[in-house]
Each structure stands twice: as C-alpha cells, then as structure tokens.
Image (cartoon, rainbow, N blue to C red; front, side, top):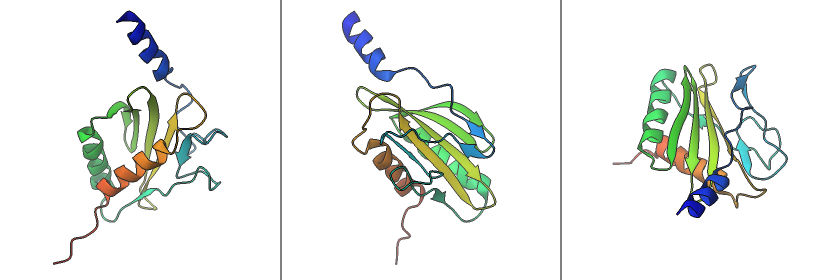
Length: 141
C-alpha cells in the first residue's frame, strides 16, 4: 500500500507558488497545451470567462456553491473575489483559479495541469462543465 500512496502523491505534483492575482490578472499559461485561461491572448489557451448579469457578489456566491458540490474540487484559498481550487482526477491534481471582475460582469477562469505536457483537453472540458452548471439555459414554457 505504501508504494501506491507514493505513486499517487508523485502524480499530484507540488502545489505551485506562482498562482494568484497580480495587477488584476491571473498567472499566464505556460507554453504547453495543458492550461486554459480567460485572460490568455492566444487561441490555444483561451477560454471564455463566466459571464453573468445582476449582482457580482451573488454570481460569485453561486460559483462557490457549484464548486462546493463537485466531488473533484477542493478550495485551497479564498479571498474577496478570488478562489483557488484543486481539481482532482483519478491520478492527477490540476490547479484552478477564479477571479471576479465586477465592472465587466465576468469571472475570469484559469485551469492548469501540475504535471505533464498534454492534458487531453481535461482542463478545458472541466471548465466548460462548470460553465454549464453556472449558466444553465433558460427553460422555455
């Protein structure tokens, strides 16, 4: 059992120290394809932010509620308008960040793998799942 625990710990990787908000921006993605960010300038890494209408605090609270209900997500850091989470798959841990932009009425997102080069689209697909939960299509009568 000790070997399996060691192997799983190695797949998790170390928690990065370069994440967080600087000058109202999340960290840039590395050149590898295992990261997406709504603040990225290149199409390879770009993903749309979470858009909302109404009260920014209500929207951010809704996001926190959605993340709290996910079995693959653990909040690591929280400050007003910012969340840092760990996103777990069977063997790997990815790092996610969410930054509230009150003026533009969006929540910027970033998700990156800790290890490896390619994530086979997992970070993008996971954030799109969160987007669907955050912004459900209105039901027509």
